Length: 584
Ligand SMILES: CC(C)(COP(=O)(O)OP(=O)(O)OC[C@H]1O[C@@H](n2cnc3c(N)ncnc32)[C@H](O)[C@@H]1OP(=O)(O)O)[C@@H](O)C(=O)NCCC(=O)NCCSC(=O)C(=O)O
Image (cartoon, rainbow, N blue to C red; front, side, top):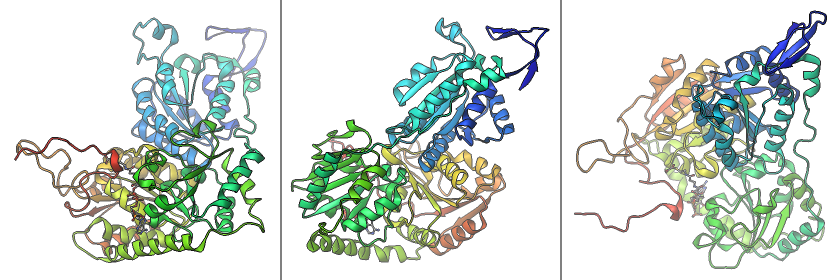
């Protein structure tokens, strides 16, 4: 904060008054003060014009600033920080290209309902609107709008407090999501009387107010559940986000209803819980008659609530969601329960009383026996100490690592690496599994790993397909620079899906293959981290255990048989098939 003598501020110019001595603040400091006032402790970003000094000053003022190598990864770190903490994760980017790089993460956060604010410096309104060719000229606000929940631009230093408050409230209230905050370069050096500046700041009170469900809606849901012969609870990542862990656990256990966790809801109740239907997914979905969705949407991951996945028996859906418009998005919802998940589940819990009857034993037994059969079928594949490793034997080793460290955070992306890890690695605690989410997007890996390590201080294990890792791999330098407790395992099978494709013309490598035998571990060593190369499940188990116990940034290159795995991703019937027969 500067001290100066002034009379008024006009057009960013401070006019001095020799008679009065006043303390000044400016746009840079007001942004920092507004964030601090609202409990923002960390900023993820990439420095550059015009926000370099904002990062420096934020650090000086006690905000932790984590600088990345690419904005998309910084954005992903901010987004997952939002998911883990229920506070908006903040990502700071430079104008135009940096802003665009951050947008993928912002759009992904919005799709996944993670609260995040992308703050970007931008070029000058007057020049942009006349298209006169400013440095990195772009109408960023217009571009961001369709990709996020709300977008705001602040033109005057006196409005920074309101701008930040609006961004915070928009990000976390109702259905959370991404928010864009546009700060033109000129704003940062606008001076203002310090006292007036402090008064202009806004502390957001009750940013995400509870939304209590109506008693009639609760009655409707309870009546349906009571009449069910084959009830099923599906927990989505909204349920994990809600941090209503005890309420949810009490509801599941006191109701006795089997539950199926979506990927990022795994661990809300342990996967080893007797009521888990995770390993009997198809049976549970096909045969259930009443399905209670808790923070899970009937999107592609649940086959839109219809078709073969859901079998031919009639279903009745109860849906818990904070967003009323989610109801009936794909099929009829018989009992919509609009409200925040904590309040809704508390209301349901109040109704599990002496008159409640557990679901019929036959249904519970059907799920249990299918689950045990699937687990028994899988078990021998996980125990093989094969060289080269396949996905199952390698994941069998990692399943044990997580079992021994239930509070570690697992980040997971890839194709086979994702699909098989989801089923094989049991999760034991809430919000410990972070993955590709609603879009099935590749590239979240290192951003999520950094965000999770910074926000929780827990050891992070990132299990990455070799292709998926490539989207954010340069952030291994960030992980080493901040000395984060992140262990990365690359499942290296020389390609996407498999490493065996060839170009039929013989001209180029096949479209899905990479340099064979690549040594990703050397990348880590280049930045002072630990690199390990392993070829067997036993070696993998030992290397990962040692890395996680040491807390040192480590990358383990795990050689997987290039022929292992399926030849395309598991997105069900959405994967297009050619109608033209191959030429012989
Ligand atoms: C499409 C899905 C929602 C549903 O797939 P399904 O195959 O029906 O289910 P799952 O994979 O969960 O489970 C497969 C089977 O394993 C069973 N199962 C589950 N857990 C276990 C354990 N622990 N032990 C034994 N068996 C188990 C489960 O009951 C199923 O068997 P049965 O009950 O007997 O059926 C899911 O695969 C999914 O979330 N896919 C997301 C994929 C994604 O996002 N990819 C990113 C794109 S990659 C990319 O970019 C690209 O490829 O391109």
